[in-house]
Every structure is written in C-alpha cells, then in structure tokens.
Length: 334
Ligand code: ADP
Ligand code: MG
Image (cartoon, rainbow, N blue to C red; front, side):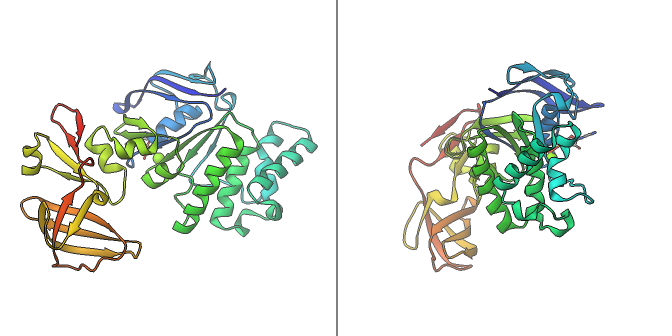
C-alpha cells in the first residue's frame, strides 16, 4: 500500500509563492501525471514529495506514513530526472547497482537485482558499456534501471523523455506504461506535454500557477473540462474557445468546441468562413479558418480533404459537443 497524500501543501521561495495551497490524493498503484505549463510548480511539487525540497507548510504522507520531514532515503521513493545524471566512469552495471552498493547489500543480491532490472529494460547486452557508448534512449533506460533496483514504493519521474527525439519518446511512452503494469508500483510523472499525460496516465492532475485545475482520467478531462484552461490544455489541435456573439447568444462567457467536433461543408452550415491555412497530414486535414463575425476557428477533418488557403467553407459544430463556460464558473454541455 503506497498511496501519496498531500495536505494543504504550500511552498514559498523567499517572498515568491510557488504553491499557494495544494491538496491531492494519489492512489496506490496509480500512474498519476502532473501536467501543466513550464514554471507552474510541477518539479517543485515532485521534489517536495521526494524530500529534495522542504515544504513551507502542510503535510505529505506516503503509504500512510507522515514523511513531511523525513530524509529522501527514508521515503521509499526513487526519482528519475530529465538529465539522466549517470556516472560517466561507471559501466551500466555499476550505475544501476550504485544505490545497492552504497547500501552495502550482498554482492549476489546486487548482481541478481541489477540483472533483473536490465532484463525488464532490455539492457542485458549493454551491462558492461559506459554511458558514452549508449544512445539517449538507452541512457534513460539505465536511469530508470537505477530506480527499479531500489524497489521503491513510489517512482517519481520529472520529464524523463524530454531529451529524446519524437520517435523514441513515443516508444518510451509505451515502455513506461508497460513497466507500470509489470511493477504495479505507484508512479508520479511530471511533464508539460499533454500527449504524454493523455497516453500514460490513469489519473491526470492539471496545474496552473501552483494551483490544481482538475483531476481525472484522461477521457474525463477531454470530455468534461471544468474550465477554459483545462479545455485549451488537453487535446491537439487545441479546443476552439469562442467569445463574442456566439457566446452571448448562448449566455456563456465562452463557447468551447474541439476541432474534431465541427463538420465542414462547401454548401451550407452554421458558420461561414475562408480557409487561411490547411495542413494535409494524410490521416486527417487540419484547417485554420477565418470565420465571419467569429474569428479564427480550427477544424479537423478525417482523411485528405481538398481545401487550401482561400477555400470558402461552411462549418457546423456537432450537437452534444459544445462546452458553455458560464461567467459564474459552471459549465454546461449542449
Ligand atoms: P515546472 O517544473 O512546472 O516548470 P518549477 O517547479 O521548476 O516549475 O518552478 C516553479 C516556479 O518556482 C518557477 O517560477 C521557478 O522560477 C520557481 N523556483 C523553482 N525553484 C526555485 C528556487 N530554488 N528558488 C526560487 N524560485 C524557484
Ligand atoms: Mg520542471
């Protein structure tokens, strides 16, 4: 049992308040992703859970134990950073086993645990190499191996894939999700990338300026964003958030509709506009339209659609997929 509970956690650096007051429940065995724009306090929060940063006030418990003032190595956590921070003069085997050697574990046990981790991460053939003889993805795997051998109750990841190229990031996303299934441990993963959050999390926590905006399963956040910030943050291309007449008619501060929830016709529809720019991706076509009396509207159409800059189009938002963000903070979906 290793759930993580944050109770009224606050963090100030001098006079700068980074986390005003944050409470959060991270279930045992979950893959929880903390996501939000750069500078919103994700790393600070993770480092407070790890014990690398003190809390200004509030309490943190891991597996039912109050660890608010415990040393990092007494918390049962292991952390993986964006910079792999491997020891360059050590082999892969020595890097992975370092924490166990430090803890003076028996040689045979170290050997077994390093090999088990290497096996999980497909690093077996690389155990005698030095970090400089590895690719970026392999180095990141070694860093994860170092965490695995410690058999932590909670894994903490801080943007571990940000230094990898796009193809490798996609592959590592799948591997991390599989690792989570296999190890059955609680994982807390920080990223600014909503795609990573959507693809790996069973619980997403969206943060902005140190404040939790919404907590939920990925599809929950996609279908039922509670405010325009969440609506605009989750999903790509981002949700259209329309003010002005369209919002006034529906007595909303803002009307949100996702690009994939607007149908297009050359003959008729609710809104008229001219395509400003179109992206032909093969699998779908994304068009940026200047809509009459509304402004910019992004639409996403399945497959290849023959439209280019200047094409006149009609657009109709799908019933059931409009999000009306009211002035009083409530949301209605129609
Ligand atoms: P994120 O990981 O979401 O990008 P951080 O947690 O790194 O954000 O930082 C949140 C805010 O706290 C930023 O404004 C950053 O400048 C500030 N901050 C982080 N660490 C320190 C520090 N040691 N001293 C002062 N300010 C800091
Ligand atoms: Mg960070």
